[in-house]
Length: 311
Image 1 (spheres, helix red, strand yellow):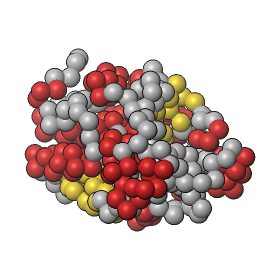
Image 2 (cartoon, helix red, strand yellow):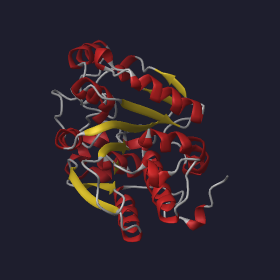
Image 3 (cartoon, helix red, strand yellow):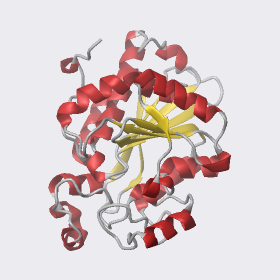
Image 4 (tube, helix red, strand yellow):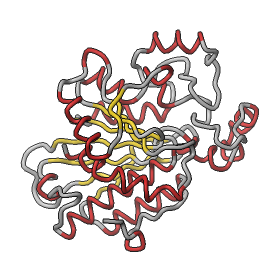
């Protein structure tokens, strides 16, 4: 069934940090079982808001927590809108007592808590959308590094690619970067000089260290692919979960190559906690994916996304 967007808070629209904060406030104002949390700040001081979905009533023991995070890369801001769309869909289903994509959401959420972090890299999103003028004290560097070139900027304001800044396969990634000339800050793929050098990365890792997530999901674009594996500590159920998500969406269940093979959030989570972690590459085309594709991307992925947080 096609989504009727006019009935929703989350509309197909370009987003930045201000829009995301406004949408988070609107959602928490409408749904009593959503709790807003700030989990850190970006390099330029922007709050990183999280929405925590917990059903009303006394919890039976410690809930199983799942984290869905998006917009690690500046040009991939559409993933923030997808994360918030999923949050609203789950809330609407609970509020109405109805299933979502055939899943009895209220029953599936019993004993579970979903954390939505829609925009990990708000400074990068601002640069991708508005150019070097949005980079504050780093504006001169960003301009010189190509920040005013449309479709180029993925990193944060310091030129560090957040999804290469996690401590997973660090030595292998450094060797790969040196070999390919990615050893200086720039618009994409530079991992930084040490793991977790960036406040955005530390906000995510610190959240995971103090919150025992059952599994995590990272939203990226593009390619219609699901990545689930990272080394010897990948749990057996990860592949089963990925296959279920792939069957629900038609997305390919595969493995990244090249620069994307190490240093990512799901890589770090699997290596550190030996629990499932997934990267979902939404949509197809060239980043930034046009907002006109949001409806089609979200509708195709919606069942998969519901399963990704409720499996």
